[in-house]
Amino acid sequence: MSICVGKDDLLKHMEAVLKRIQTQFNELDEIRERCFEMSRKLIRQSSIAIKHIHRTELDKAKAMLNDAMKIAKELSEIISKHSDVASWGFVQDAQRELSEAAILFSIVSGEKLPDPCELNVCGVAYVHGLAEAMGEVRRLILDGLNRGAKEDVKTLLRIMEETYYLLLAFDHPDTITLGLRRKVDQLRSLLERTHSDVTIALQCAAVISSLQKHSENLKGAQ
Image (cartoon, rainbow, N blue to C red):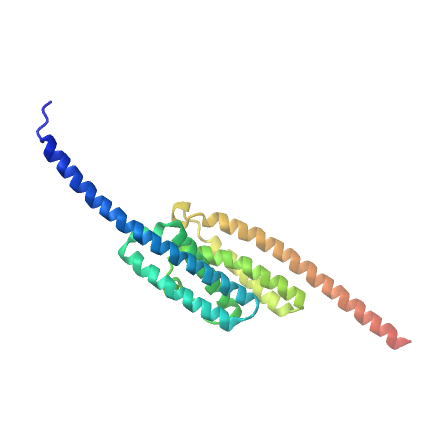
């Protein structure tokens, strides 16, 4: 076998190719640093928004969400130029957290449910955020039981149930949904526990109410 390409020509070409790749990697590393910091801010803003929602400080929650959505838009613009960014775990985590906060805000405030395009998040992050938002809905249900807000509890439980059944329809491979099936299984377990908690609490409330009425009737008869 004879080697036709000269050693020097081959190495020069190799060096030029690798320099171009290294330049690309350096640029991507700078982008990664920017996106990592933006993702951290996005997660922080979304988490704070969720805290405000549970405290019924909806104006503060809305302000945090607006700030978070600006960051998400910046991230989306970077993704449009560098598609690799979309697959980075911390970017997906940030988009999921924003989706969760925005969906929870919609449930509590009664505002229109935002779609992924409005939030500048991908569909996978959105459905994961929707599933995780149901954990926060459970917290709202338990709080409603403590306050005796029976109608709110029933409404939230129905939202939780319907969301589970809607997500159950996503039977696509994990390579597409990135583990959504496991999250839906966890939601089913959470829903069962919530059903049990609500049933027990309402039964206890009914017994207490019946005893109070009985006590009042006895006092009235004396």
